[in-house]
Length: 124
Image 1 (cartoon, rainbow, N blue to C red):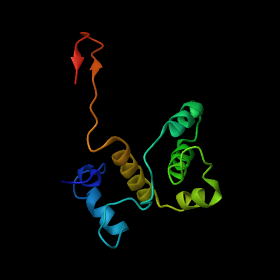
Image 2 (image 1 turned 45 degrees about the vertical axis):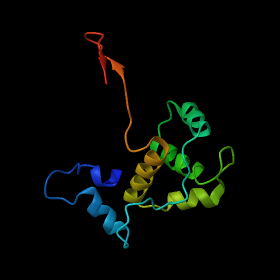
Image 3 (image 1 turned 135 degrees about the vertical axis):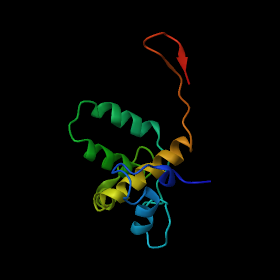
Image 4 (image 1 turned 90 degrees about the vertical axis):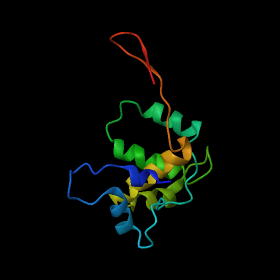
């Protein structure tokens, strides 16, 4: 089974490296695992933090804070060491960590059911 990294499409069009190739370049071992392997699943603590951030302008800071919080137990302030580890990630490494966090929190597939605004029918 492929990882979420392997299934990400290259946003820069054909000819460029795919996500799996980018992951191999970042990780010399060729692993597509997170550069922060000790990340834990998202909890209500992070959900509450995101809700309080609503309307905040710096979403990169929000993402970094969520990753830092997922390096420690829920309810514990991550502190400067965890924040520095996240701040030190390359953009591609941060993206990989986010994909890994999404996978461990929600699984490989996310099911969604919404009502169509036009006809009112259910879309799955």
